[in-house]
Length: 174
Image (tube, rainbow, N blue to C red; front, top):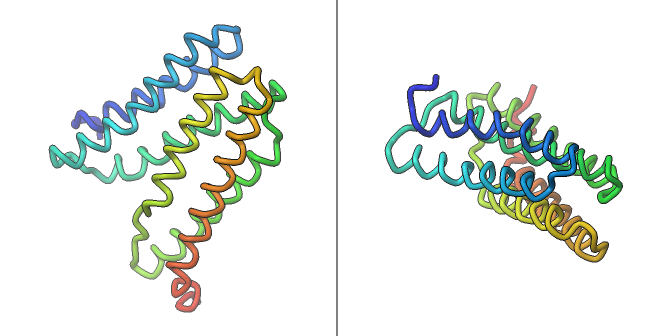
């Protein structure tokens, strides 16, 4: 499980989430931003290390995207609680995540694996950047709104792409 450097970095990202939230809720937003950036950069680092040094594992394939979702959704929930993001934005993101996960489960039953699409990677990166900007400039409503739009557009776009490229999964379902 944790024999590879890539998996250790993924685990570090998961451990940083409660640290990030603790700093957010105690008003240490500058430090929260630093921890958030480290966690986001760890996503790119573990992926690079896993591919470049042939450290791809089943644990990493499962936990890396899960760690991303945990980090992003934790930040979004904090912003909802602070009234800097409406709850319906988080609901759209959650709907997409559950829908794509459901699609992948149906595909697995057919012996097929749906790999991460570039649109999903762009969605993750855009969301991470937008949330980071909200941490830095969240006092400016216009920044928040622009960030919500970026998150929503990339989320909906990537969700539609996953389904359009994999419609045959439903045609072949029992």
